[in-house]
Length: 100
Image (cartoon, rainbow, N blue to C red; front, side):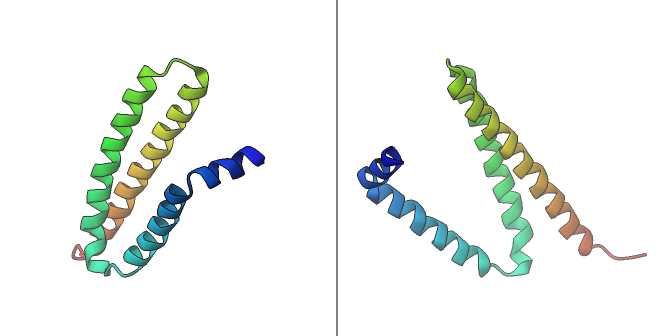
């Protein structure tokens, strides 16, 4: 517990920046109109695809098990995020199609 506290005290500015970014992201996302949601989701999926490729490359260069496990977890969670995003985007686009 003491090492975690030391980490936060040593990296105060970075922790503050991450917390501020989270609140800013929540505020920005909550004010996005529904009409813009689908294009933004598609862009986010493309960015997450790049993140997955980066995680695979980093995991490929990992030498210890302690580095491979978080890399594998990052690839799995990133893939779930991309697949979920495409499913949501597809469902939203289905809403705009004419019904027979």
